[in-house]
Length: 261
Length: 296
Image (cartoon, rainbow over all chains, first blue to last red; front, side):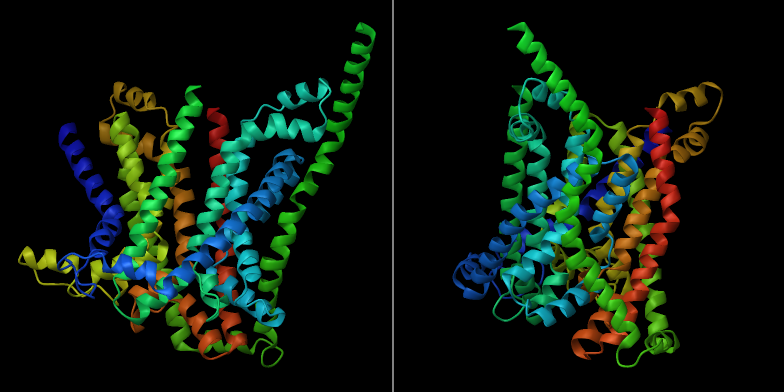
């Protein structure tokens, strides 16, 4: 009997795995569609949607906009979030807990409510459709992810190492640069990656604060989906999927090498 | 030489005592930039939403009276909660056995199962919703399979079940991961003990294992439910006029009708619902911390 329930469990997990992977499995073949249609299965084979992505200015400018915004957000949110992680971990337990709860609220506030509020503020301050506006909003959304990633590293970090370094005469900045930072670097880097992805993939706030002059990639994808059945979206999705996979595999390999030495 | 060294040590000791005494108060200030960003781009905008809901166009609670008196709004509000409940339930049914399987399989299979949970994140959120349009549409993958099996096709796109399926796929990892992280820490020798004392395997599982895994279930369920309440893109693309959720209604009031007061009132209702749920769930989350501390 236990073997029967094991088979049942295995089949069930297979179904859940298919559910999880189905979108990816559909998007990749669709990106090579020979026709301008989103009917499945795709007919024929062509690279035209990839060509379209790289040649059509709508796609290339929105891609570079997203890249610029996300890179700035990754830097700014990582610095601010890492500082905050130090504040949360090293403050008195109660204050730290409160501060942490406060700083992760962006994760639970419904996106649309936040978006209309930010839109209202940006209309008054002429920040709609500006890089500054995007960076500010996305930094706020990314801070919780950096905070959580860095805090995880700080919690396993042995503070006696800092005491040892400072007892040997190192100043606080030197201690941070030569002892603390190298040891929490994996957390900081994964925080930066999360911040980048949060900004690069953000759509709800972006839909409100976008303008014809400054569109990010998700906004371009969204308007393409709502306008017509253009498989270029599938090509973009596939390219992003491959890029993310490469970054994550590189990160894993780097982590493994680190772990070995 | 030794004298200066000693002196150096003494100075360092005094300094580190000084630092450790004063650092708690000083450390909090490191979070100041983050708090500032939150004040400017989170608290202030939300404040404006609340302010406008009470003042635009007239001062008072008119917008809220309008919201709760309109049958359409009440239907949409109710539907938003029903969809969130369905998504939570379906995610839980999918996630619980999956997370359990993750704890009992070998290393390689576990890696494969974890990858299946994480890979969806590598696909852009909007593109993932497009994929569900492709899968669910009338001539889509699911209906082709149904037709191939000789069954009649089902209308999925622009219906509530379609929205629930799409949202469940997006939110499933948020259910699987917390449940798995709690199950990982459960001591399976407790099950063996129960069985050796004569309990049937299923009884041991239900009476020992399930209660121990509940903190993870609570954490996953509350995250999925709250995120579902605020979902916007998936319902907007997969849903039809009969499956509009509250977020779309807010967007419509503000962007199409330029009615900030009414849109704001709806937003505040959504916001209050979210935080009331979080406050209600907080004790359950705390229980999780307490139990993990007991294990450690």
